[in-house]
Image (cartoon, rainbow, N blue to C red):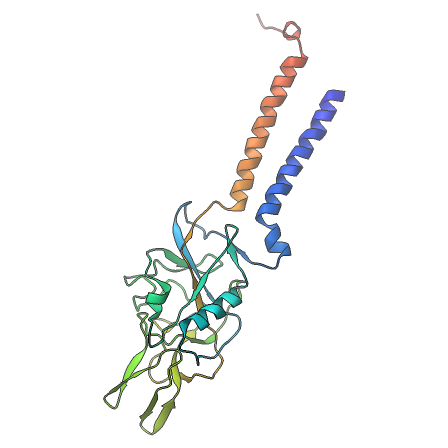
Length: 276
């Protein structure tokens, strides 16, 4: 009984220690470091590739024509968010006179998801169901990485197919990308230093999330609006809960075998009743 009591306490300590180690490795950073640890979207298998998309909680202007200015902004807004223990790198979804949003973000065949696991598009490509196809998305990207939802206006400078937004005014092609300073007069309305915007709404259809269109979508570049950020391609890994269950299963199985072996060592074979 003395040996069994010590064994029981030892087993309990082993289980507790294993749980604490797994817990610390998987969740402690989220609880104590102030950094959001994103989880694998439901339905993905280990090894599947995907991307995250989010809306910045804060706003910025659109006066810069340098796309890296907006990359820095969305990365700052992500606040070091991680996946699988690694800090995620983000790219702004926006077009300037020198780069289109779909080129800057990259054409990939991986699904695009919000942080809560909601799928936005089946790919970041120019195909049906893709982010840059110009059609309705599976859902609207209206949440930040913390799951907060927004409505209103977002800077893009982009058309519905991921290229810089342009329109023809009085037979002149005008560019309305981020940082442009075009001046156009249309029916006595002067559009001076205006940029194309998208709309943050749960019920928008088509490509309005990227491009409201001419002329309602043209906003003064010094206004303050949010932006979209899209992650580099991620590779799906098992969730911490799966790892915990697996580790506990292995531990319990090992303890069970060890108990069986110790019991055989403690009880002489001649003492075990035999059925004849």
